[in-house]
Amino acid sequence: MKKNVILGIDVGATGIKGGLVDVTTGKMVTERFRFDTPSPATPEAMAATVKKLVDHIGYKGPVGVGFPAIVRRGIAASAANIDNSWVNTDITKVFGKATGLPFVALNDADAAGIATMAFGTGKQYANDGVVLMVTIGTGLGGALFVNGELMPNLEIGQVFLKNQKIVAEKFISNRVRKDTDMSWSEFGKRFSKFLKHVDSIFNPDLIVLGGGASKSFDEYKRFLKTNAEVKPAILQNTAGTVGAAVYAASKKPKVK
Ligand code: BGC
Image (cartoon, rainbow, N blue to C red; front, side):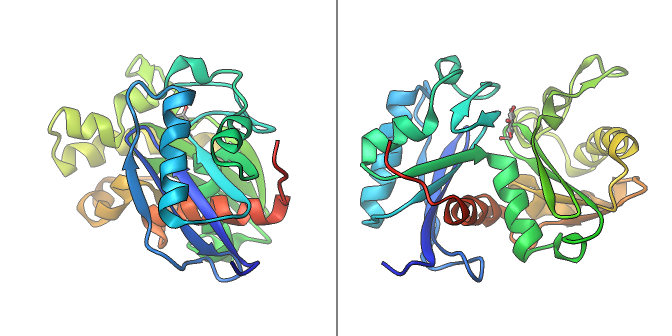
């Protein structure tokens, strides 16, 4: 296996996706393979799925994993859309034990943001400016970059919207859209309420949208009324996988 080719995994509430990434170019060198996230999404069940993915690719080497929770030094500190037993669990240990490979873990939106800043839509502000990445999937993920520096674990989906009396990701997300059969225009109007709110707090130069709903950006962009420019991530759904691999390359993990 070439040194610059690293396995990136994007753990989501519905799918565990991964593939080999050339970390110098940010390009996937295999397709992105996907396995359903087991339910309940316990550490043991998810570790078995991660092993299946690793075996399927036939990979040996360091692995980067983007995880849908607050992640500090490899340990999950929240569980909004996964099984509660993840809280205080060392993600790198659980996946490392199952596969025999060295893992690093970070928040999934942070991983998507890292790829966006290095190779994608955020590049122009990599040295000067503020970029807010918002991923729209089962939950809402956030990553904030100031002059290219990541402020990790920005839980933007947990922001309380006082007019709606609910946290942001329960008000609007790709899951809320699908569960309620929402039209794209209604999605756009709701999403704009959320986006205007966070725009007025963080005042970024650019807001980049990633995750499942970013693919349909053209359907709802006309409803987004923010001061900051809003763009879809050019890496779209692969950003999380690419960013996780790039992060692993920078950390050189060891087997725990
Ligand atoms: C979690 C975040 C995560 C986001 C996107 C939210 O429910 O709290 O940590 O980044 O979903 O998966």
